[in-house]
Length: 401
Image (cartoon, rainbow, N blue to C red; front, side, top):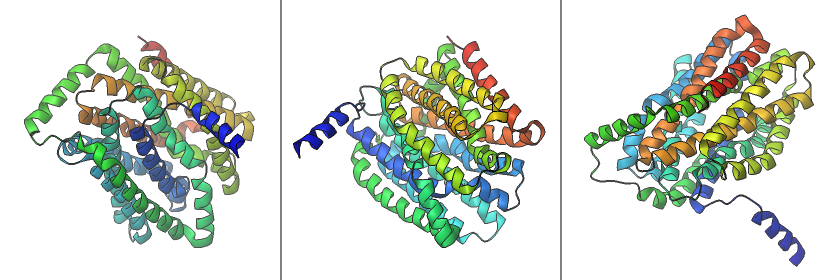
């Protein structure tokens, strides 16, 4: 019995360091994404079966991500007055209500309202979670966010397959009910584990005047050329990510004629392969400067997107796997570096720092989905992969400090 325990101990000792607060937030993020990714992989296909055009798919993603950006400042203000652990739990409950709303959907107006609800719920969770991380004393913020951002990859390794079984057995309603249950369990976990951590950020004397002053300080720091250039590099990666998030599955289905089962296998294999790679990335970003992670990540993302487009006539399962692994590595490095950079620069005002970080992420994805939805019918997938990758690569090179 001693030998297996020894081997397990050796394995665990080789993992990147993770503080308790980072662990709890990453677990909650994992279950949030697990509940969402049970069906989100099929969401673009679901929209197409409803008769939506490619631009309309882009508009739908805009409706999800734009409310995150618009409500971010208000949620950051709430984080001063209400325990962020409670707000994050409310955000998770909002995801559960979204799943319930999609079950009860009766007309197009309600459908779009559910997308807005999802965006507001995401703002509550992600701003509050980021504020807790940024407001904590951590050895490496880049490494902590590396753990946080890798959680969706772990969820994606198995959630779509389980979701497919439920869709097959119980239709779309079955998977949404399972999602609802998981979100309610996760909300309880988040509330019990993070309420104490969020308590330290509360400020009873915080007023709207303080809120304005904090954002003035934030924008003063944003004006710094060094900081602004790094944020713009990161933003370009997010814009490209919006294209892939909205249309990659549609590309596999419509252009390559992959079956749903093959798409499922691909997503699971991709996510399983990312797991060990993500541990290496977390170690790497924890040992280098944030700006280096952002720069290297943007170049890697751009190169693999360009290659994806150039090799499109020859693409097969292994080649697509390699291309997406490379792009995912670059994206994880860039996102971890961006959040780590903002954490260090805005350490004294973590609520506003979390809002700024959260504004960039959904805004970039929303713009990427919207722009690509409008251009896809004219340019096609190949040119968009190449032009998107070239854009990210050039932005990284031109704005390198």
